[in-house]
Image 1 (tube, rainbow, N blue to C red):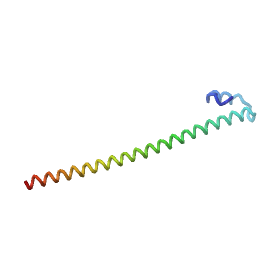
Image 2: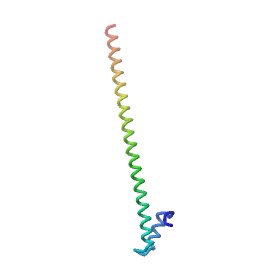
Image 3: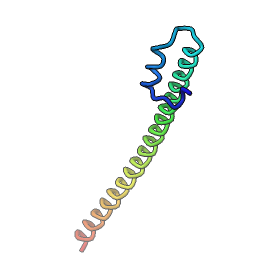
Image 4: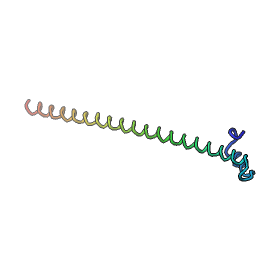
Length: 88
């Protein structure tokens, strides 16, 4: 009965309850269930964001390594070209 209600409808329903009644306990239970579900979803989203950040860090590290090796190869090529022009 309470599960399909929106949060606003549930809040309105709870405002008309007598504290301590069975209906009030049911409404509080439903509210806690929804809160727990939302916290679980938020925790899952945080975990996924952390995994995405780790993956981005890995790609950034790999990209930096490739750039370093390309600079090393370019420097070696420049040194080789210099030596060829000197001893020609």
